[in-house]
Image (cartoon, rainbow, N blue to C red):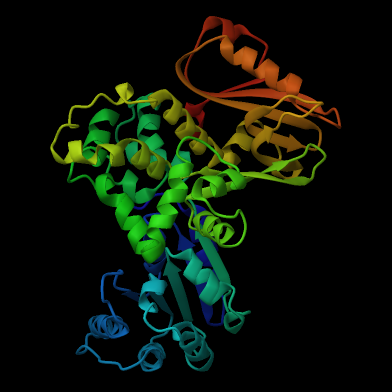
Length: 472
């Protein structure tokens, strides 16, 4: 089921109007829909050829990838499987087979897997692009992959490819309004139930495809997460092994540190026993580029970005897996978790609060739209934290939007009943916030749950945003 991606398809359709060969890079988290997007785009081409690499396994070699590539080429062009000794020959042959086909779209999917066994693969691809592929003005070549660190190092940041990539698409999760389409045949499913599901899947299309809309959120989650056969039961290991390969254990340790909330770089280093610079910085950057982690910088209300930052686990599935699936794997294998009542799980409300916060932060354009904030007036929009000093108390704000004329303090709440405590919390945050330019302060409650009468009638918040609005 293909849903959304209107913006990306619009960019690709514009790209097709060019009268010259084009090289596109499409990257993003595994299961985010990169291949599906290009396949949807490929429907507009009479000639669309798709090649994909073999996933990592023990003892896989460059020859295995070459043999597989030759077999795919034979299938694409309805000829016997071809055999190649090197990637130059393979890519030159592909360019020759497509040179007289008119408008052509070629997808090299999981490009890092294709070239993993040849250290010079990227250089050979660049050479064949310069001498063969780009001479066909009607050709578009798409390099697609989940291992963003490989793409960054070998393609986007490589001097050999400088000026050759015409378009880079980085796919993020689907907006909530698009994710809602997976329930479009069942219009009476409650907002609460949808968000219960989205708190585990996020806006990842492949996970959303697994939803059986006629089933309850509980039934879906139990089937997908707490049964040995469920997709999300084993998905974590596949992600980390396929993308991070030999370093998967190190990356696993980092994301585990982030399960219970955002953490400063120095504290991550302390827990890992590493220095906060050098190798650790590189590892954290890879997690950010891979779409699993976000680095949230604190912006001073003077309009400047400070050096202070925290890393946040922005991927809802990873947190849910590490918190609730991995610790119970033995019980799940024995079938002891099939009838678990989710809301009895340890720290359920706290973890769901973090998951809901992710969904909001991953949908900032919708927040701005609901608040009627012009994007060009925004100076910064991110979580905010302030440490205790001699002059100020510590405070933490779920989302602070600083604009030219006003500061929006957003509290994101998930509770069955949201009572007067939320007002007290907001008042403390306003009192403690350092606002050197004395801008207007507007308070926003973004919530999932039922407001008590006192909160509903209170003027403590200038804006009330029920999460169901984000599904429209």
